[in-house]
Length: 415
Ligand code: HEM
Image (cartoon, rainbow, N blue to C red; front, side, top):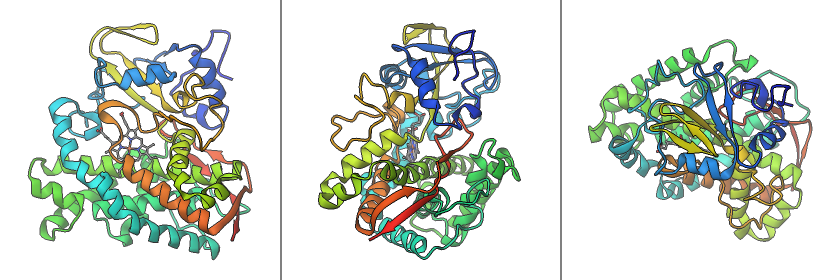
């Protein structure tokens, strides 16, 4: 447990190893108290940072009117002396008019309409993935269980989780199917933190490779326009090539690295709640409620960081100007004052004001797509599966950005 003689918060909450075990929920519960802020001294973030855990404080931190910005970066590691280079250029790290302009240009590709028109594509991908699972096909190279551990059943994290979101995001960005595994492998490395299986390439190297891939894609699209986001941003002329690059990176990482864990978490949720599949089969109108509960329960984005723009108070704590504060979204999504019996996955939870997609002006632009992916998947699972059992306990990634499944070996009971 985190509490030490020095009291709660003495540990460095940016330490990725803290998140490798499901005990993290107990840790967050203890830290949340009755809406507290906890200070992490300099360590993973050079100047230290405050953390908030309650639904109220996390909502306030991210609210449009709050005196906080993401322009210096929105992840632990924030360094006052060396602000994030993406600040003011990448959608998620921009504010004000610049953020509006970027959002207006990227939104049409990730909107509800786009999600609806991509649903047929998602359906085909899901069928293909499930057929391969049924045929017992092994995981593709590069997308496999990071530590190569053997599983007694298919490993959903590598065989489903990494595939569906990658297919969708590559379709949006005009990445050909033949390059998908390469791009997924690179994002695995870029986001793999200290995961041992990704040790053959460090995150910054993988990031450079992604950027170089997109530089080539921009050159290709300029010569041969398509119907993708890269083509649209080039035609629009508002962004230069470097800015297009960095925003494609935002969509690629935003679309892959969170959704894959929600997709994997679907199977985990079904294994722990055997009543859900029959309920969805009997009444498909329950699928949207199931999607929201799975988002709340899996909460794949683990933290977002903001920096105060003036002295303020959050969760009862005075915060000076220029100080980073982290919102722990999974902790907020299990806040019992907002979600009674928060560990239970309930199809009748209403309202369900979860913060899985954040809150305020940076609320996830891919939310409609992610919801559509989960809905299409649940519909197909209700049709094809009688049930899911865990073959082994889930293994969690050692990272602080996402609540990530390293592996989820299951036994599937086909209908
Ligand atoms: C922003 C979570 C899926 C693209 C965000 C934010 C969160 C989040 C918490 C807010 C970050 C902040 O406030 O600093 C998730 C989760 C997903 C998901 C949990 C899946 C379950 C997607 C998908 C895409 C996407 C599928 C695109 C294909 C983006 C973009 C932003 C964003 C572009 C920046 C929005 C802005 O700054 O205005 N996401 N996301 N996300 N997400 Fe997602």
